[in-house]
Image 1 (tube, rainbow, N blue to C red):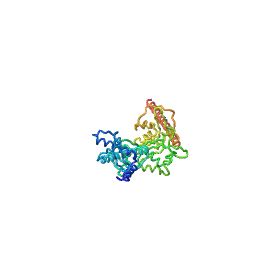
Image 2: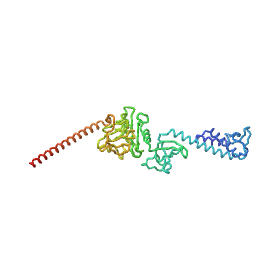
Image 3: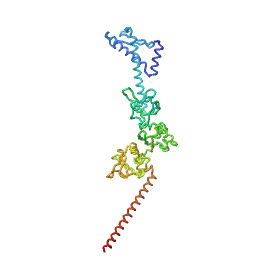
Length: 389
């Protein structure tokens, strides 16, 4: 092999695969020493008793004893070539493995685009260029349909050692996937002016996200929605129509819980800190909206706020954990009730006035009915007495 040819081959391996030439040469020498000892074990020589010399210009290898005498057997070149090839391939695999670990571990929690390369046994294999990523069934959105060569965005969730070596695990169902999409789309989130404080998601159906602004002059919800909804619509398109509720974060627990149940109007929130429960009152016409289809709205509010939410209804309470309505036989032990003002102040005040007026009207009607019944009873008694006489 000519000098330039050997050097150019080594240089290509180093540049394309990121392998250190010194590491490759030392590994080849070790491999040749082992190959010599194994092939000529009858001579009783150990690896420590031989020295491998490789000409870096020509690639020619020699086996020397400790005194520097050339003891290279005839035909050893074939063994040397096989060993060298095996070592180089192993080093390339190790280098690629380390490269993937280093590169993609730094990208955990970030979004990357790729093409669907293969779909097998419920796994979606995505080509990311330098390597392939795996999207397990649990990380897929069940309402989405994946096709070969389809280009999609995914969240790098984990880099781990699997049965096939280093595996890059990606996701489209994670709540963080939506958060990162907003970070890419909304400059105020990217620069830290607006923060995503909490996010809850039922992939493919609905997401609730609480946002907060570090600048009083910037509306956090408006920043995420964008002019005419262009920012949020771009993300909804990427999520194939998934609904997104963006709510303002409030330091007041009552306000935060009331806001989390949006779009329902909340009239009152009572907190039981010992049980980490919130008892929420809503108008009758808002009850189904607060609970949501199959309990989804109150379930997402529970995930978002980390408070167990029970919505007061006509028959009892709706439990955000169980997703079922239950009757209540006792009054919950709560601290002083605080109305969830600050979000729908005018609506709440109006609703309370209407409720009080309705209650007063009902009581007046009951009193009138009772009065009529009493009068009828007295009249009937008088007529009976007269008839007897």
